[in-house]
Length: 173
View 1: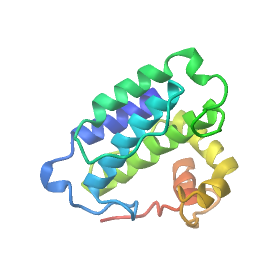
View 2: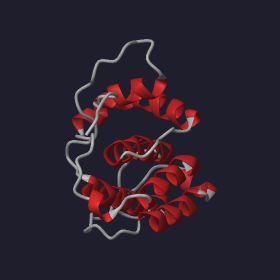
View 3: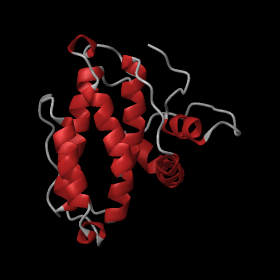
View 4: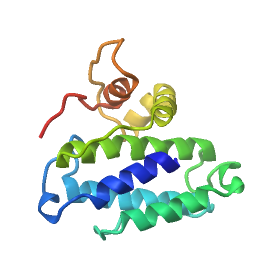
C-alpha cells in the first residue's frame, strides 16, 4: 500500500492547475474529478481502517497527499487488518486490496492524462492482478470495473491488470 500510495501522491503533486480539465483513461473522470475521487478513496479507507462508516464524497480539495498519509497511518495498525468491516461487510484484507487497486490503476490514469512517467511497483501490480482476477465479476457488478479490454496473454502483468478492469493499456489523450 505504501509504495503505491506514495507514488500516486507524487503524481498528484505534479499536476498543474491547467491540467485539471484534461481527460483520463477512466472515462468517468477528468483530472480534477480523478484527484477528487482519490481524495475520497483515501478518506473512506482511513475511516474503514478504524472500523468507521463509508464516507460521502466531497468536492475536490487539493489535499490528496495529506489524506493518503492518514490512510497509510490507519492501515499501519495491525488491528486494521483484522475481522470484517462493519460498514461494508467485507474482510479487511479485501478492503486493503481494493484500496491498492485504486492507487495503482488511478496512478496510471493520472500519469497518462498529464504526461507524467509511471512505473508501478511490480509487487503491488502482482497483488492487484491476483486480487482482481478473483474479484473482477463482483467489481463489474458494483460498477468498479468496466468491460474487459483484450490484451495478449503474454502481455506484461500491468497491462493485463489494466485490461481485466476495463482499461486500454494503449490509451493516449
